[in-house]
Figure 1 (cartoon, rainbow, N blue to C red):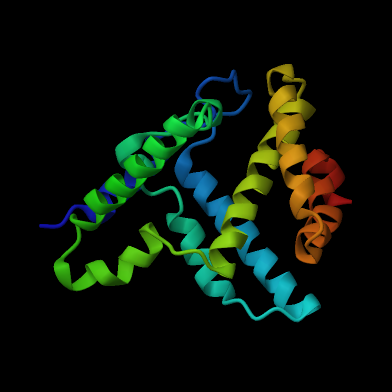
Figure 2 (cartoon, helix red, strand yellow):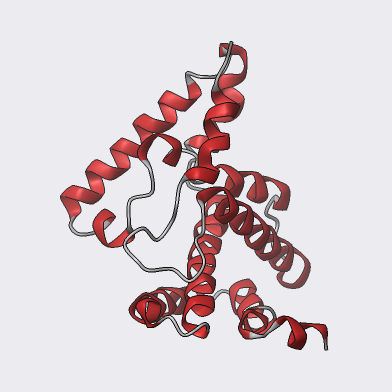
Length: 192
């Protein structure tokens, strides 16, 4: 019996933004899906409009698994993860150990297929997942601040500043200009 898929299905039980009062609770499973959608869109935009040659399907799959280790570690809040270099280094080691633990829950014959998903190497595809993760954090902040939750104002400002670095990339600028404004609209406004 192998427990890998039962284990990662528990991503739906892991709450994000644990130190913040949320108007809507987000779990890691739904976050991973949103990151996959946004990362895939960034790849398609890059390829179709700006001459990129990334594997959009690989980007989506990497994004689906990008937080899988949280089934072992839980979601450590960003201010804690990056409080100092020592904590950040230890946390990255903890994530790698959690990924190895998850891989061990697969049959040996499948482990090498999942290893690059749980422990991805630096690549253009992995970079798009990282950027999409930041965009999705920003979208969460947009929705929370838009609903009147001032608790997210500092996170909104910090995330917007982090994203500004990536907006020099044309696919990111395109996504931010063409798709992000809709996240501030009501359902009725979206129907127009």
